[in-house]
Structure formats: structure tokens, C-alpha cells
Length: 319
Image 1 (spheres, helix red, strand yellow):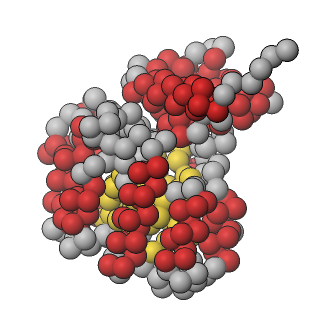
Image 2 (tube, rainbow, N blue to C red):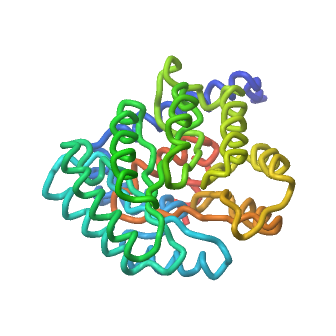
């Protein structure tokens, strides 16, 4: 007779699986090798479809229109972090500029600054980010800077601060996991642009961040969410954690309105029931969708957030 693993052992295995997935997400070589592998690529691509709108801008436009029809706002990101080629970083910037022109009304544009040059040269990243900021301003949509690993946080926040000197529609993402976030929020609140609060999915040491399974992470997230809500600053509560969603909703009085400065956000493939529930309470809601050919690292991080999703990935790959 096969005995079930004790709960502590199961949790340990899940934690280890998540760590392995996050390490895979840091392997920049795999983002090219896995999708391009003739045997593995088609299988993993099937699993990725749950989390990725498609590989082209046209796919993203189509999905964004569907989300808008469902009554939610949309944020669209073209994936491709850690670009090391300056010419390619500039060419990728053109895709974001095209997205600003082609996406339906009500869609914001999100991006990793390392996609457009931050991993190469900060001045190149600033020049390319400024182009995207100008394009999004011209089409009346928000621009949202995504979070990256803690080794890039200083550079990301510095570039965001520089953009805020010229633009008032450029937001930034902060991670509740990072111990530094309390101080970062104090510096961000006086600036314009939406603040997007996430838990954080990157592989980080305990000296830098709360482990994903640590109850202190939920406590930190709720505290930051309440601080943002009370400040009246534009903000997004980006989480699929039902308990946190309910507690934030309670803090907000159990109801929202169309012009509220906050919004509840979930990722494509995760939490549509959360969005519908919060929309039913009158809160603004947003679905975050991604597109592009460099989906491997993104999907690894989605699976790492909940290793049980590996089982669903196996089902998706086989169907």
C-alpha cells in the first residue's frame, strides 16, 4: 500500500519545485532553445497557451478586444526581457510603438525595461522608453513598467523617476516580497503614474525578499495595499489570492465605482472569477495579457507561483 506524503513533506517538494522553475526562468539560453526544439517546443507551446495571448501583436489585439467586451480593462505586454543586442532592443521598441497605435481604447501597455535596453545601457533604455511614453501619451493610454529581479530594481526605479519628470502617465510595478518596498513606496507616492502591487515571482534570497510560502508575504502585501488605497494614488492590486482580494475589498468598504483610483488585476489564464466578482462589487478590473515568442521564462514563473499548475500544464500539453 502506498502511503501519502505528510503535509510538511508535500510542501517541501512544492517549494523545491518552485525553486527549480524559477532557476529555469533565469536561464536566458532556454528561452530560445525550448520553443525552437522540434520535439519539445510544440508540447510546451500547448501549455503556454493558457497564459499567453499568442505570438503576434495581432493575437494580442484580438484578445484585448475580447477582454474589453467582457467589461474589463486590459494591460498588454510584449515579452522579451534581458535583451543584450542594442539594435534588437531598438527594433523591439518599434513593436511597442505599433501596439500603442493598434490596441483598442482602454488598453495600457506594459514592458520590461531590460527588453528595450536596460541590460545594455541605461541611456539606450531611456531613449527607447521615452519613445514608448510619447506613443502611449499620444493615444491616451497608460504605460506600465514591469518588475524585474531585485538586482535591477534600482535601475528600473531610477529610469521611471526620470520619465516622470516629462510624463504623468507612466506607472511602475513594486513587489511586496522585497524588503525594500516600504521605502520604495515612500519615494513613489509623490510621483504621478499608477503603482502596480504584485507579490513577486523571481528567485530571490531570504535576505532580500520574503519566501513565497511565508505568511509574512501576505501580511506585507495587505499592508502595502491598504497604504495605497488610503493614499488615493492610482494603483492596481495584482493578485490571485482570494483571501487578500476579499480583505482588500473589505478595507475599501465592499464596493467601488468607475472612477475609483484603484483596480483589481489578474493575469490571463488565472483568476477570471476574481475579476468577475470584483466587477460585481463595482470595482474597476483589469486583465493582464502577454504576447510574443519569448514566452518560456514567463510561463516558468507562472508555474513556479503554484507548482500544482504543473499538473494542468501536463494536461494542456497532451491535448
